[in-house]
Image 1 (tube, rainbow, N blue to C red):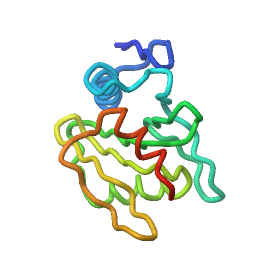
Image 2 (cartoon, rainbow, N blue to C red; image 1 turned 120 degrees about the vertical axis):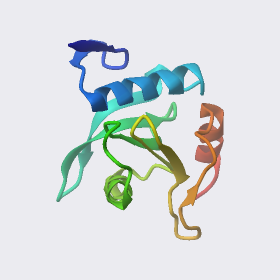
Image 3 (cartoon, rainbow, N blue to C red; image 1 turned 30 degrees about the vertical axis):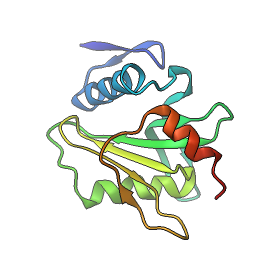
Length: 138
């Protein structure tokens, strides 16, 4: 079975993880006003030790990363190991927001910085809020 990926503009095998990813993409675009053109799927992560791909990367109009998302199948528990995975990916990406979901449980947080620890958010921010963060000096 296949599902159409509106970001990659092609049909993809419908795995449980892919279904979660496609639901998240739809939610971000339709409910949180994220521009589809600024969402990347399976972006290569360039690191000396890693040859991985991020599930979703949301950028600003200048191409700077704003949010990194990791999707798991609904039967995969969101554990510390998943947060460690996305944190390792973010060492390269350096997005100010992280999102982890299995389609049942969703966790959105700000990335840790030199001056502040990571902090969980009550909800996934609107795209406009992400943009405002990207304008703040680091």
